[in-house]
Length: 176
Image (cartoon, rainbow, N blue to C red):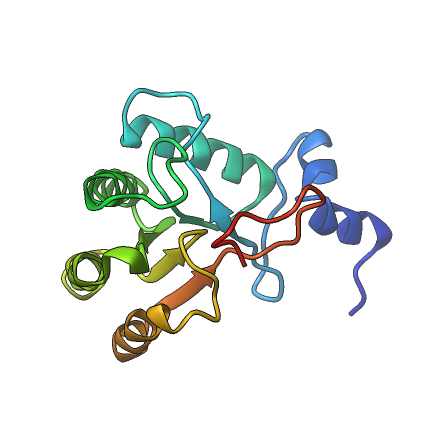
């Protein structure tokens, strides 16, 4: 069955039209929406749980079933040190817990700190609640330094989200 024009636009526009009509967009078995690129940075709230609640209220209004959350409470450095990775991953785990099954977490890793990152992968995915890996701008996606992380993620059946884009002003040195 083909969707109506209104149904199509509601999905294509992030369910904005359906939300403006009064009721949130309702996912069906044939149409389920997951947002795979969500951050807590810039979101109201002092704690990961407060920010998770705000994100989920927006998701509900837009008919988004699940959120895949990356990074921590703020966007950090391009080459984050282990202390920042730990802080960010802990914040995401708290948001995942507060999300009651609607928020999925991705562990933030930096291949420039390989041993630490492999340990975080085990802590957050193997032993914790996270389901995937977030790689950002520390190294290009074709860099062999990512191979051990990719191998370990594959062993754990974890999703890998490699941030890539082409920016008009030019990409950062490690950005794919």
